[in-house]
Image 1 (cartoon, rainbow, N blue to C red):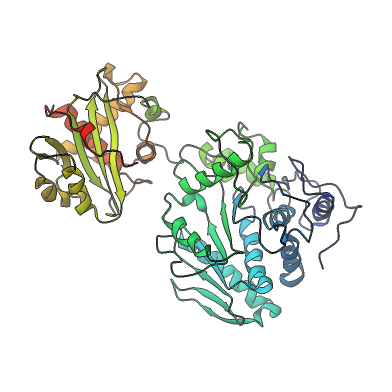
Image 2: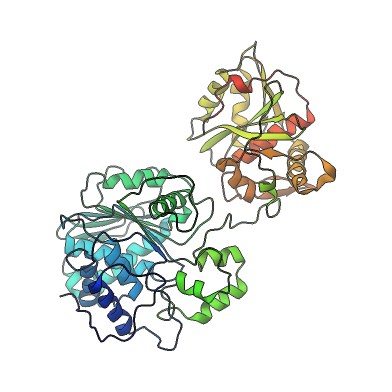
Length: 545
């Protein structure tokens, strides 16, 4: 039985927004706050309601949401008393459609500060789905496989420690890469690596994607979420705290959800229709909150005063770099978590979205391949009419077939009558394998980048970036149009010192540095070799983004 809400409950749920869940829901949550054994009466309490959330379609009762059933299962069977915010999340996220069978949300996005207990709520959801709903397959994944395996392992420990659950367990597979919890009824909980092969060939009923902020590409998302397409009642749960500009998957989902809510934080551009199958439940500090604004702590940390002490947050605020505290503890988005090579705002100073390279300007192309050989990019540089060198990423593609597609890309617009030049690092990197194939492209002159040229090229690039802020002796500053594939590595690229100079360190860079290396090479060629070849920029299929 679902616990009845008492009108005489102690206090009301701490909240920054009206619950809008109806009278029953409000009374239930009031009791949850008043009765929670973990509550510290004298402590500042985190807000139970999410600051930003998708509104329910109707009153949230045990007949319209299965969240109440999960709460009961957790309390009565597992013996875990969920914190009030965890209960509110489950009730909201497991809202049913009018047919009473299908979940309203196909995708649930949970955003909350670190160490607030999102793993616990997902564990209870997972076990409930297997033991109560009888779902056939739960798939857990994370960018770091250890994270997904830890969540799985804790679920196994719960099952083994609760006699009622253990009695229905068929077995546990603990082999690395094949971990699985199997029940007698055929229900399974598997762990899969977050890559392009994740879950292929499987049909999942509940998909758990942990630490979604670490997904810097759509590869894993595209693979694992498609396992739910054949399941009418399937749900995809995405959990994370806030990220930065590299968190492309989480950022996109969040923007879509915010757009449907009228863009409460002003993060969207343009208009769009709401998606009734996407729900967002976000405990985050409101935009503009200072680090030491303790109401922001309450907004982003709903476990404050239950399992999290205020002093812990105070210590983090005093010692963490501000971007870390904002993402981890305030669940606020930042541009980047890693300090870039040019200083704060330098790359942004070079932005010129309307910048155009003249049609008759000689161009320098360059090619680079990431250290893992998993992607390749073509950069281009030309001098504008105002004297500024403009760089762009002209082409790029994931995959290991770059030895074929890059030469073919140039053959699409280069020949004896339309020559071009392309810079390639001569040795010590995967791109060196392209020297010979590119040399065979008619009309393409291959320029080798090697030795001291690496440090010279990187130095030239640095000087032209910082020149936008008034440095480097009045040199015409670099210009770029703003391309995400280039902006991310430019803000965070790692440097390797060599002698008195340095060059880009592909392996140590937090984001794919190949686009940055490619445009650096192109700039070096443009500024040092002064090519006089006619422009082929407008003649080729250069825009692949």
